[in-house]
Image 1 (cartoon, rainbow, N blue to C red):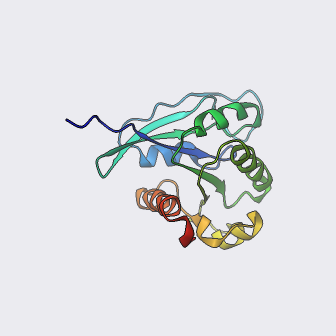
Image 2 (image 1 turned 135 degrees about the vertical axis):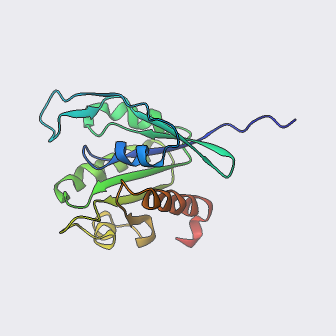
Length: 176
């Protein structure tokens, strides 16, 4: 009998309000364990993730653990801890909040300078008016266009498409 494979780990990071919790909830096949608390500072919303969000899904018989990180800088130790051994990282940025892009870049640089993890940037709120397009965000981050994709984090099809794109980049990096 073949022993079960260890679950794969996918990490979802980004600034506060980028859609991390929503994205994990949308992808997860099980109820998401969320570590939300009332915000202790003005972050534009009442509650925020303080440890991580956790959900699961199964891809072709393989268990995948989904971890959503906190977005505030003071929780940056969690970014590194959660990314250790991860299959990949989805960095979400809200397309209608370009003022958060510098923070998103800091998160990405913090993580990738410590952990070699394949990543994809997801530009959320593509269903809203006046949002940055994925190609504009790719230019801002100085990344090839295939490393940035648009999505609505509440749409299961969009969330799955982002996951599939990340897996394509991870499994076939030369095609990007």
